[in-house]
Length: 116
Image: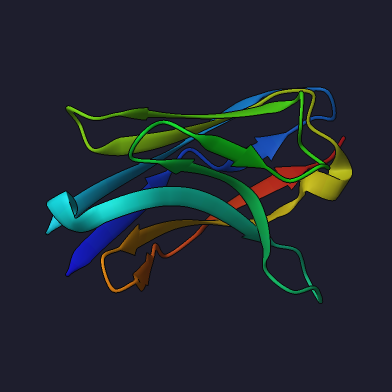
């Protein structure tokens, strides 16, 4: 079992920045990749960015050049640095971990609101 705890959401003005964190615990040695997804009101959950154990990253086209995913292996934490935020980035951001199997685990989500 893997447990994920997100933090760092909040209210920010358009053009601002936020950094989300996702701390993993439990059987973390089984994690092969982690990522961030988001869900806006009335919309389906969508991929934002992922990072593998080897450090390979993948981004949604809508966030390329603005968001950056990174990880701290010692802390077993993944970060999402979000710059040049837009109102359409508003939503609940969820951390996901993919383990052997594969199996998928989700955090509880953190709200990001971009508004003036």
